[in-house]
Image 1 (cartoon, rainbow, N blue to C red):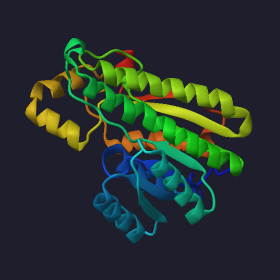
Image 2: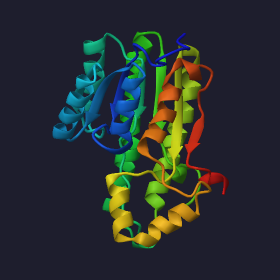
Image 3: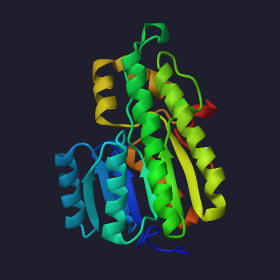
Image 4: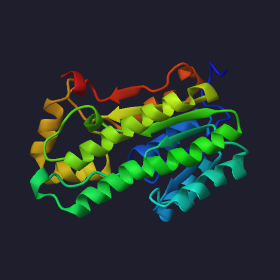
Length: 256
């Protein structure tokens, strides 16, 4: 069990939603800790650029274009990891969407379907194929990206809240079902985290920045690398007795 130095050394890791935000940060954090990564997302140009960046730093990295809504894409992504690296040791299921802030009674079917399909069915698709590959190679670790919205209620975001609660439910169900087969499944619950979307929201609605910071005891927005570090730890052998957990990475928001 790796305890010193690079704590993900040699591990083959699949990261979804890897083209930006927390997913791209995870690619950098995981490779710094010695992981071999397969990056998966829909935007090939960004994936290619990030893969080139990582390789220039000496990391083992590759990418595959993947829409987590499509089982065939997820199956191909998992197969790419095992073909390239020989096994699948860990996964960070990060792909997801947010959505507009709208009162529940004014939301249409399309908004609900888009959020629930990506955030819940996407994780469901990933779990099915990832677990299958891990069972073939003696186990592994999976981290699903939920949100503080999976732990508490936030106004005007009902489908998003429902989807992130569902991610936690899937996490706990899979953790219980596969623990004795050597597979750990955990979730992280980030608070407000800097990203292109968040930066744009804050630029257009400065009051949202003030509200987010006021409701967070640390009084700031998280950097994506801070969230990625939590996911990296949960994917490592240092978290060997942690499964079915939901780890807030939120500056104290859920305790406020």
